[in-house]
Structure formats: C-alpha cells, structure tokens
Image 1 (spheres, rainbow, N blue to C red):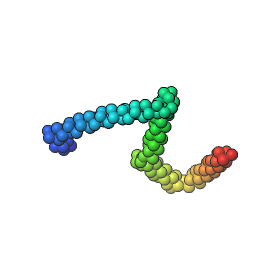
Image 2: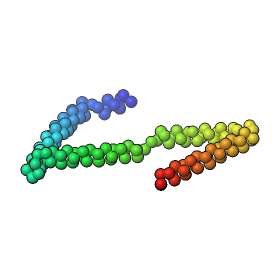
Image 3: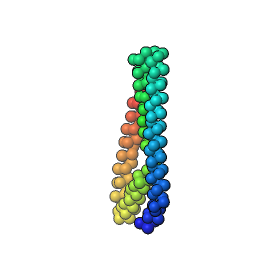
Length: 139
C-alpha cells in the first residue's frame, strides 16, 4: 500500500500538485476580489437610483435569498445521499429476524403462532395510528 502511495506521490507529481494548488489559490483570491468589485458596483448603481438605505436593503436581501437557496440545495443533496451502510444494516437485521423465526418454528410451533399473533396486532395498531395521523394532517 505504501509503495503505491510513494509511486503516486513522487517528486514530479508533488511539484505539479504544489503548482496547481498555488494557482488555484491565486485564482480564488482574484475571483473573490473581482466579485467584491462587482458587488460594490451593483450597490453604487442601486444607491444612485433608490438611495443608500434602500440599496443596502436590496443587496442584503439578495444575499440572504442566495444563501437560503444554497442551504436548501445542500440539505436536499444531503438527505438524498446514498447510504450503503444503512442498507446493509437493514438487510442484516432482516436476516437475523428470519433466522430467529426459523429457530422458533423448529423448536416449538406454538411460540411461532403466538409471535405471529403479537406481530399482527402490532402491525394493525401501527397502521391505524399512521392512518389517524394522516387524517389529522389533512384537516
């Protein structure tokens, strides 16, 4: 593993990586300065048209709207991310439950019948409760 890492990060690669990082950083700084000038120009143009106070309110409102939009996009992407570990955990829990059910049925079928009755009652109760919640939210 270390050999592969050392082969990937030889002297030439590190030099190009440093150069790329430096150019990226300079590009970000220059872009930020340019964006600052554009924002100042927008503010000055708005101030000439509607006054200083309203120009500040307009520019601040625009930034708040952009920020809220970015937060909404990030939140949506976070909630829709793939979760392979959770899927594996659910699969493992279902496998364990089936193994336990098979063991109960083999040892004593009456335990399986009692467990089925309890699980059926719990399922019916939960379905009625979720239906009641849906009915409340519709009202």
